[in-house]
Image (cartoon, rainbow, N blue to C red; front, side):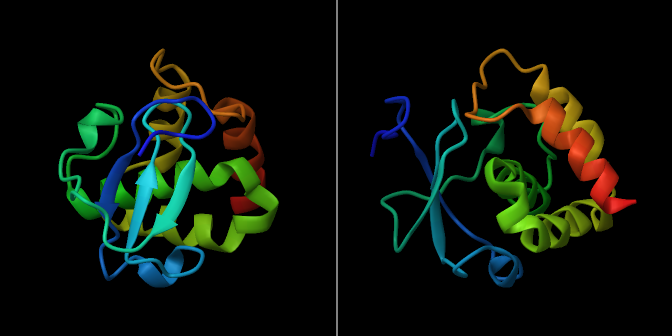
Length: 131
């Protein structure tokens, strides 16, 4: 299950049931590239990702909040298209006691991540939209 964009091995994980309504297509599982953050909905991946530090150690420690943050970050590639989903996911991260904008700052500085969008500029746009 390599990423079609960068060739990295994508990480499968089950989307927590509480988050599914906030993810486009309401998938039960997704594949997430830990390098470029390309996200793809799938059904029944081979393995369940439980350690989100394999994506980045700046993601929240609590599993549902980490899943919400990882998915929201990946959806930033299409902020205009996924704004409502991103807002709902980031609200869940905030409800878990984590500052999602601070996490985005730290993800922008993570040398292991090379998404096809600029996290820092999307963070600024998101800040304007969420005011």
